[in-house]
Length: 195
Image (tube, rainbow, N blue to C red; front, side, top):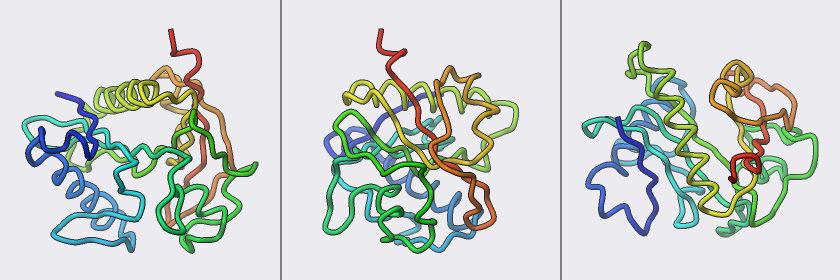
C-alpha cells in the first residue's frame, strides 16, 4: 500500500494515478452516493480541482483505495474560493449556508480538505489501515504546505476515528444532512504535529 500526494506539477510522474483518483471519486460520489456532480470521461470533478489544490491518494497496484483533496483557503478561481467558504457565501445550493459556527477563514496557514472518501471496493479488513494512511499523508502534506490547521466537511462519525488517527479535531459547525448523509465541518489543529 502506498500514499502519494499529487499536484499539477508532479502528476506526469505518476501515470494513470491522477485519472484513477477522479474515476474512484466518480464511483464513490456519483455512483454510490448518487450525488449530482459534474463528470466527464468516467471521472468526477468540480471547480475546486485547480492547480492550487493537492490530491492525496492511497493506492495499491494502481487501484485507488482512498483519497482527499486539499485546497488553500486563499484560493480564487473566478467567483469561487474553497468549497466550505463558497457554501457559506451562498454560491453552492447543495450545502447549507449555516455549515460553520463562525465566518469561513481565509489564511495561508489554513487549508480545506474535501472530497474525502474510502473506496467501496476497499476490503473491510484493511479499511482502518487505509484510513490511517490517508490521514497521515493528508497531515504530512498539509504541514509541508505550511498549514497549521485543516478545515473539512466530513461525515459526522468523525469522533469515532479522529483520536485513533491522532487528530486534534473539534466541531466547527453543526451536524447536517446532505443527500442522506450526516456531515459536519471539523477543524483539525496541526500545531501539535509540527515537531
